[in-house]
Image (cartoon, rainbow, N blue to C red; front, side, top):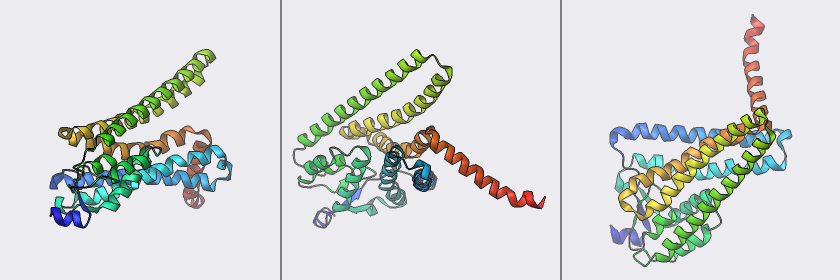
Length: 277
C-alpha cells in the first residue's frame, strides 16, 4: 500500500471518525449547514447584482465576503459529506488535488502568506500518505514528510501569532472608538444600534478566532486530533452561515431591499385568494 500510494501520489484522508449509526444524522446536519450557507451567500450576491440602488462601491466590496464564504465552504463540505459514508481505505485524494484544496482552504482563512507557506511545504519529500485531518491543509501536507519541518512549523506559528494578535488589536481599537462615540453622543437610539451591531459582530468573530486558533495550535498536539477536527469544521461552516445574516441584515439598504422583496412576494402570493374573496 505504501509503495503504490507513493508511486501514484495517492493520499488517504483520515476524515471524521463516526459510527455507522451517527453517519446519517451528521450528514444531514452538515448538508443543512451547507445549503443554508450557500442559499444566504448566493442570495446576497444576486440581490446586490440585480438591485441598481445597491450598485455602489461599498456594496460591491461587500460581495467579497459571500464569495469568500462560498469558496471556503464548497472546498470543504461536499467532499467531507461524501467521505462520511466511505471506508477509511477508500478516502483517497491525489497529492495535486490535496495541494489545491489546501490552497483554497488558506485563501478562505487569509491569502497573504498562502503561496510562501505552500511553497515551503511542496519542496519537502514525502514518506507518508495519510492526511491526519478531514481535509487537506498546509500542516497536514508537511506532516507527510520525514524531513526536518522546523522551518514550516516556525513560520506557521509565528505568522499565526502575528495575524491573530494584529486582528485582535485592530478589533479592540475599533470597538474602543465605537464605545467612545456612544459615550460622547449620549443617544439611546445610537447606543442601542451600536450594541446590537457590535454584539453580533463579536459573536461571529469569536467563533472564527477561537476555532481558528484551536485548529492551528492543536496541529502540534496529535493527542487532541478530534478536538482539532471539530474546530476546523466549525471554522468552515459556522461563519459562512452567519456572515450574510450579521453583515447583510445590519446594512440598512440591503435589509430594506430584503423586506421589500419579501413583502412583494407575499402580496403576490396572497393576491389571487384575496381577489376570489
